[in-house]
Amino acid sequence: MMTETVVNVEQVPANNNANKTTAQGGPQPNRFGWIQMNVDYFKTTPGILKLAEFILGILCMSLATPGYTGTGFFLFVVVAAFILTLLWIFVYFLGVREAFEFPINWILTEFLNTGVVSLLYFLAFIIQLITWSSRYHYKGVNIAAGIFGMINTGVYAFATYLLHLEWKNRN
Image 1 (cartoon, helix red, strand yellow):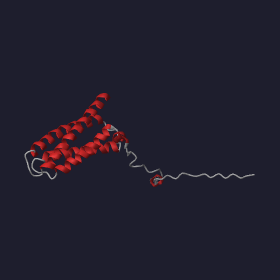
Image 2 (cartoon, rainbow, N blue to C red):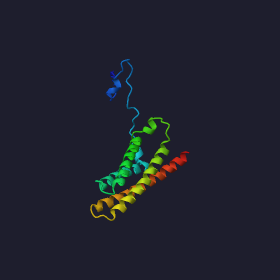
Image 3 (cartoon, rainbow, N blue to C red):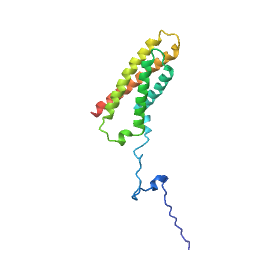
Image 4 (cartoon, one colour):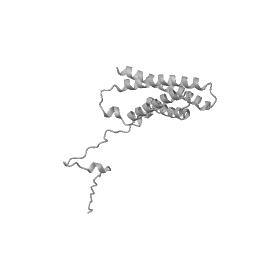
C-alpha cells in the first residue's frame, strides 16, 4: 500500500505594502491605486499622432534654439504646444480620464486644445519661414525648424479632425 503526500502552498503577495496595516488594524489603502499604465492607447491612431506631435515638437525646439531675432513667437508656440501635448500624453498614459470623475467633457477639451494649437502652429511656421528666408546666418536650421513646424501643423490638424469626429459622434 502506497502512502500519499499532499503539499499545500500558500501564495505570498509580491507587494510588501499589501501586508501593512493602519493604526486601527485595517489594511492600508493604496495611494496610487488609480494609476494604470495604458500603453495600448499609443497603438491607436490618436496615440500615434500624439507621439508624432511630441517628437516633431522636440525637433522644432532643437532646430530653432537659440532664439534669434524673429524666432521668439515660433519657440513660444512650439514649447507651449509641447507642454500641452506632454500633459495629454500623461492623461492617457496614466488613465486620468478613467480614474477621476471630473465634470469635464474630455473630448471637447482636447478638441479645442488641439484646434487652437494647430492654428497657432500654422501662424508660427509661416512667420518662421518668412523671417528666415532673407537671412544668412543660421538660415538652414531655422528653415528646417519651420518645415518641421509645417509638418507638425498637419499632424495637429489631422488630430483635430479626428477629435471633431469623435466629439460629434458622442453628442
